[in-house]
Amino acid sequence: MKVLGIESSCDETAASVVDVSEDGSSARVLSDVIATQIAEHAPYGGVVPELASRAHLRAISPVIRQAVDEAGGWSNVDAIAVTQGPGLAGALLVGVQCAKAIALARGLPLVGVNHLQGHLLAVYLDRALVIGEKPAFPFVALVASGGHTALYRVDGPRAIRELGATRDDAAGEAFDKVAKLCGLGYPGGPVIDRLAQKGDATKIPMPRPMRSKRSLEFSFSGLKTAVAQWVEKNGVPPEGGGLEDLAASVQAAIVDTLVRKLVAACELEGVTRAVLAGGVAANRSLREQCARVCAAHGITAHVPPAKSCTDNAAMIAFAGATRLFNGERSDFSMEVRTSWSPAEA
Image 1: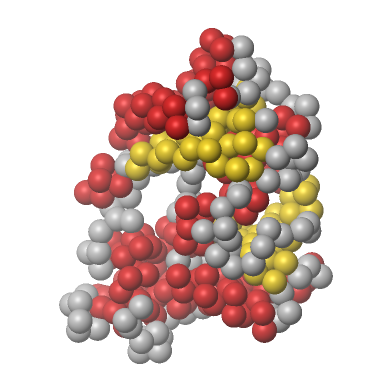
Image 2: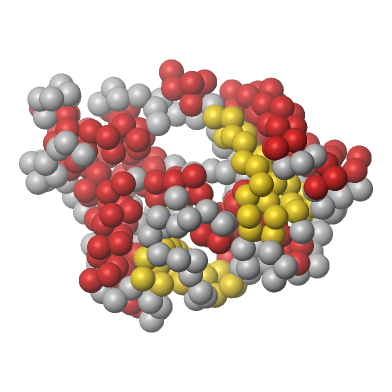
């Protein structure tokens, strides 16, 4: 089965065609097209919902056309999967309405997909994993991005249970807010990651929130406050004069917290497989530390390539395929869902 996936939940307009294996266990990516909106939102230090919606409207038709052409044309598309939520309402509407129009015009089956379920299953796309092989079920997954930070136990494509989530800021949001405080631009994660490679993470003490091993919840607002107080007292150091140490210290606090909670979740659940997912999973320090700490605790880490971690439509197409194989279809009354747990999908 060849499925066209459409993703427009936030600030990436994406389309992809994947060829799903006969048993539905993996998918070969035939095309993967992404139009980013970073330049549009950078002046504001974050995503502006109205600007995002307008950018999706401009990009979605050419992005879909390119993805379908690269996959061999519409004759190679058997079904359509689209992100139904969670995300920004206006952004989601662009993708969902476009998917409905195509499905109606071409007589193709349509299915709505939970964006986070896509992240959780992205590890099964046929791209060489950076660390580990494709995991068997069950596994514990950390989804960390600009809008979400949560831990899930995954017993199957539709058997997902939330173990803990952030009470306030998501990990990616914390990176962006710290970068904005320091005038580093948007998005903040890649900039801090680059600077941190040259810094000393022990130079500036930063809090590790909610350290209790039995608590699987997160909170990053206190870290942002700690950085704001440090900057107010000391000023923003220049690059080559301490900025790298600040970046390394902030990144270490975030990464240590994420990895500690992921390992704790595996141990509490009695699961020996851990998966990283979401845009923050592209962070080099997180990937390296996850592999190292998991190995020390007898846990096998599974880390997809960065292209499978950041928002993409291939993961939406594959997650949709698992629903299509299960006989599910969405009708044209399907509405977007701005808030939607994958455990409820």
